[in-house]
Length: 196
Image (cartoon, rainbow, N blue to C red):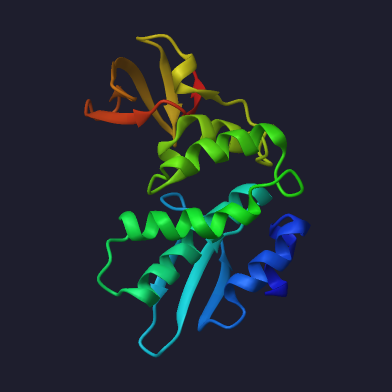
């Protein structure tokens, strides 16, 4: 448990210890992955492991860890429960509640987290308001990035070294065309991109 203390707010350590100290669960900090912030896996023996991306954003790290601990509890109690079903949501809400206070999170982030926890999604990435609020605490603020939502239609931008054009809004996402392969892709509105 001590190995994760540099990645989480100090006031959350005791609560996390209470959640995992008597469980067959280990937490590993891994290099950043593009497609996910963390995951839970049941190993062949009686143990389970949670991997969390190394991050300088203590709030994103903490919420991702709690999210994955909820998966562990859900699996421990019912191996056939849906990964982001009602049982998981109830457990996630229950174990998150003690952490939702001003001693752990800044007030503006706390408001977004409380809103999110009313009906938690399978990923924070699907909650635009929360994602933008969490982004404020990322360490990569030096990069000149903008949210796709802030660009006008027909604007061009780069994302992961490919050029795109913003075509139209589809509900909560944007349809964008890759200028290299001419394929269409859907982007979340809070995708961080570089303008051309």
